[in-house]
Amino acid sequence: MGIIWLSHVLDQTTPLYGGSRDIILQSKQSLRDGDNCNTTSIMFSSHSGTHVDTPYHFFTRGKTVSDFPSETWVFTSPKCIDISVKPGQLLTIGDLSNAVSPDARLDILLLRTGFESNREDQIYWKEGPGLSSKLARYLRTLHPSLRAIGIDFISISSFQHREEGRTAHREFLENEILLFEDMALGQLDKTQELYQIIALPLRFANADGAPCTILGWEKDNEKI
Image 1 (tube, rainbow, N blue to C red):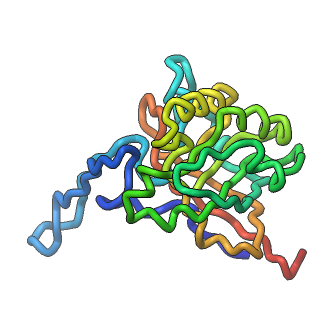
Image 2 (spheres, rainbow, N blue to C red; image 1 turned 180 degrees about the vertical axis):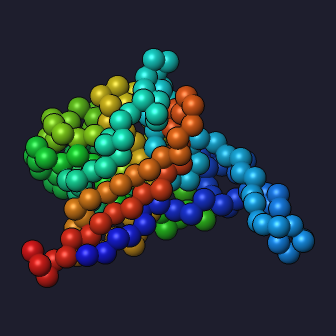
């Protein structure tokens, strides 16, 4: 059994949607400067780095992070599928139909495209892939227990298809399918399966989204 990070480290080089660079990590106290301890002041958007989108992101009466009970953030029937993408591609039902099959237990679906390899380049936010709005109902039909989607690109809203991206957000979030964006899926061994994921968002008042620390537990295939 192995436990792996499924979230990226947040720093001032973290790519943000639209290309903004407004993450600030500033030392407030430093042992090297003679202070008694090290402390850091941090400032960033609620949608920075590996983060979750909640319904309040697009609905005035939608749930915030703190509106969800604690068990919401524990997933015990995850699945990761590999999908090939091109820059700016909008993933449709046809793109996923051969990779997904009905599963009444599945509660979180991870889409691994490999696009996270572009995180240090402009193409990551400017030409990232996105999800078609029609996928929300399609995936819910296949997976009635689905509570979350996770992706290894910056947003389900491709910068090349922003209006469709807004519609897709509404479709997923209206059905309380949480969206985990900018995940770290590259180090997940393709020969291994996950049996549990815990995604812990930063809890603050009226959180429409929040950076997350996400861990995945790999199955011990030798004992299966």
